[in-house]
Amino acid sequence: MPPRAWLRPSKSDGPSKLRLFCFPYAGGAASIYRMWPHIVPRTVEVCPVHPPGRGHRAADPPLTSAIQMAREVAREAAVCLDVPFAVFGHSFGGIVAFEFVRELRRTHGVLPVHLLVSGCHAPHFRRRADPIHRYSEAEFLREIESLGGTPAELLADRELMEMFLPVLRADFQAFYEYEYVEGPKIDCPITAYGGLRDPQIQERHLRAWREHTTKDFELHVLPGDHFFLTKNQATFFPVLGSEIGKLAARIGFSESRLSA
Image (cartoon, rainbow, N blue to C red; front, side, top):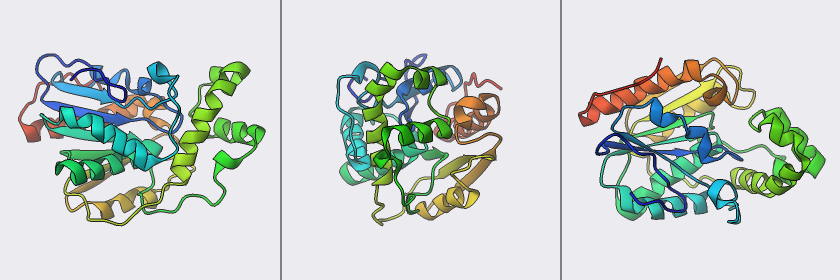
């Protein structure tokens, strides 16, 4: 698949048998998935999503709509639906991933073999009443720091933070202003992951993803807080690896280099 704005896939060893689209959390970049090509089966092509306003798209204005993001990624993904694919999203990325799946169903009549979401409310839950993107700069920065997903060195660099604040505000606006529109359940299995010490996402928020699929649902609550996928990789990667292994078996390949 040729490089494009939103999608720049990793290289698999040989022909790709499965593509794994990965959506980052609010304020996150595709770089959070940089190690994933090394912990999935050799024939899996990791395809991280590159939102505007960061990385090679630093000059592109950020978007303030989860639906628009999902539609734009789906438009690019249309050229790479030649092999089975799965979709992963963390936190806000889980919402965009869900809408991406629904957009592909609407526009191309295709679905992934699996949807994997982590640290994310089921889409029908209402967001908090005081959306943080409307906070003053000082209040917004305090809230971002308390969430724990922004590197300390970035928070400490005033000049960099001033450049990155519009991206953060746009992402959180897209998250808090997202409104779920009821529609048919999706005909693919869903797996949800959550952090045991996540102050934002409770088990009931994760378990409610079951309501959005006609297929199997599985829930894993793991050690860690909201950012267990980056802070507790030693625990998370084997569980994720097990799920990818199941997908591998389902579509007929088994060669793996999953790390423990």
